Amino acid sequence: MTKPTYHIFVCGSFRATGAQGVCHKKESAQLLQYFDQEVTDRGLDGLMVSSTGCLKTCDDGPVVIVYPQNVWYKKVNEEAADAILDAIEKGTVAEEHVLA
Ligand code: FES
Image (cartoon, rainbow, N blue to C red; front, top):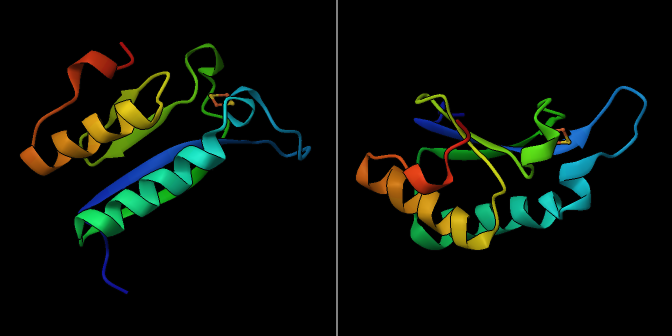
């Protein structure tokens, strides 16, 4: 396996108890699928998408983190996902969606 240049983490709300949290209720699982499909459609080699446990910023969910930039995004929907992927392709940040 080749290590990714960029890694997108989408909060999947997982907890040790198995309970699902805010981001899951705001359809982060569908968002994860959307990111995966867009990465494939755009041919973005070197970009991996994964889900995470709760990122402890539930009020701003669905939360997405992009590494290696360590940029956190809030209230991400498909439109924001497109902006985030556009920014990665340009080497910039989708400022309007950043979690400050
Ligand atoms: S469930 Fe996503 S930040 Fe808590």
